[in-house]
Image (cartoon, rainbow, N blue to C red):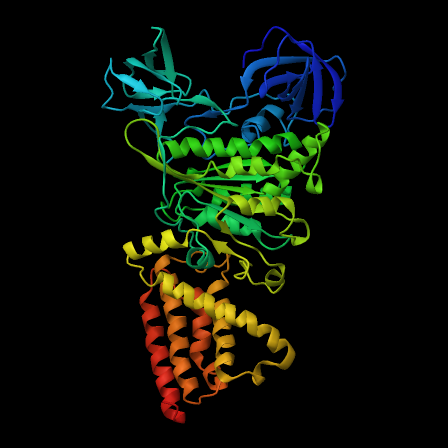
Length: 598
């Protein structure tokens, strides 16, 4: 960034902020370098002739009267080829590059480096339809590059451009900063276009129109896909206390969902958990392409011991990069872990600004900031030509203190998301994972996804879901009675409900993220599993009505088969499930005829 000659001076230092005087004008959101080491900061408040600058690096060693150097630019993301397979900090500095500059595993202060490599060459292939002299506008595709083995990216004209195409280069090898086209604006000036551009992270990128829900994001996680689905372009919250499995669920969604691009934001997460992500993801193979998963993934790592101000910026940096890939026509999964740590950063910065706190010390604009973040999700028609549809799906973890879902971050989040996966510490303590509680979770996309299911040949999805949820609801009501009088005192039909609910919980809802077969479950297998469990219930119910005791039904080998089919039958070997269906029918007929319950 070019520095403005005029410089200000620090007049006070407080927490992660400094106050400065000495400039004739300040601009909100302006990036400013602080001190002789040129630490990166952003103007977040202006009062009279005093600017408050939020600094994204540790402030140790700064003194009153140290200089500040404004740049005249807002905090922006560099957008272009080279983002995928990369790992950034909260203000888009590539961590591998920082490590090589620092010469150690520790980030030194004052390091400035480009987010995108200016030396790497990319094979640019211009779009054939573009001709010299025609009008171009923001969002138009200039050409393509093969960003990774899995992803072929579009080179986009920045959204705020309109003019006449003067020149476009031929196919060849170019760096992101090389000129690939030239256009003439309304005033007649010729301006170069490169394969990269910048966009201010706190401003949502524009699009042509927003589309209605058209189908689910397939995750391979049974309780999500079948019970509480999220749509393409949807939003979901994953609230839960310590140890309830938030991070593992997000890892599973990142690994197995049918999104084209995955952006994982470690926002204030513990260092050891983020280290696991950084070590594990480069080793994973994408099940959709058989290429490394990192080919379609980028990571933002801003762990809890890194500067709190950069944590606040990391969410905006991540969603801006997600919008860039959305505008290319990709379905993007953005997962943030966790928004509670981000809200805590807001609270800390607000305290340093001496703003009036509200509930639990959070600033009054907490809800507005959360709304601004979640509203940037959605399925859209992108600007420009040719026609492209893309989406951003947001799944964000929330870490309520003590698992209290009534605390401000969780309560405000529920206002802006349509899917809510409430994690239950009681389930986690029983090693039931994912520990999503069916009683306090919900999805607001059911009607739209039922329409999608009908169109795709899954017409039984809604009925299976309703029947299973009804069994689980009835079982939840019976649990309180069982605690008082025991299950044997219940009528036989209610004892059967408890048995079937147990099969649903152990054989369907529980899913082992570390099992080679059970870690991912195809939609076809999920539907067949639901059908088998409900068939077992239907046949068992007939026997119960004819006087058969539940103990005899529970003793059938089929019960264990239903519980173990998730781990024993592969997604590509579903014919084995047909054999289980035959086994259920023959088992029930044999039991009925043997004891006269037919």
